Structures are given as C-alpha cells and as structure tokens.
Length: 114
Image (tube, rainbow, N blue to C red):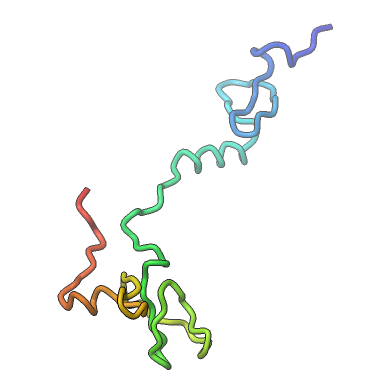
C-alpha cells in the first residue's frame, strides 16, 4: 500500500502554514483561515512615510506650558500634551523648539509630491 503523502496529485502543502492537505479541485489553502491570511498579506498596505516621527515632534502641556520633544504626556501634571508640530532641541539652550516658532509661515504639507 502506498502512502498518499508521497504523491503531489493526492496531497499538497499549504503555502501559508506548510501543512499537507488533500488536493481537491483548484483548492490552494488547507483552511479558510489560511486563505484569509494569505489574502490579507497580499493586500497589506505599507505605512505612510509622510508622517513625522513622534521623537521629532514638539508637544506642549496645556496646564503648565512646558514643552517636550517626543513625549506625549506631561510627567508633572499627568495630562496629555498637544502637538505643536515638527521640531528639535534648540542648539543654544537645548529646549525643544518647534518649526512654527522659527518659521512663522510654516505650514506642514501632508501630501508631498512623489
């Protein structure tokens, strides 16, 4: 008696989980879960690259007006901070400074030409 796992016409491997299953018709996946996972993986969208990283964003506390670079919660007031936009530490005093403070007409462009 021959073992059916040796014949590709009888069994095949699932491309998602690599388990052997009985071939029938044009079936490519062993289960509906593997079929759905493969469909989602094929249609996964890449993350948008036009966003500013949180570490490069200046935030300000609404209560004490303290500025933070990349920190979304004020440790003193325990409140969420508001975003002021992209920025960096000041080269003279090392305090976080937003681009809108340096360039008054600065308007971030969310849709950059490709």
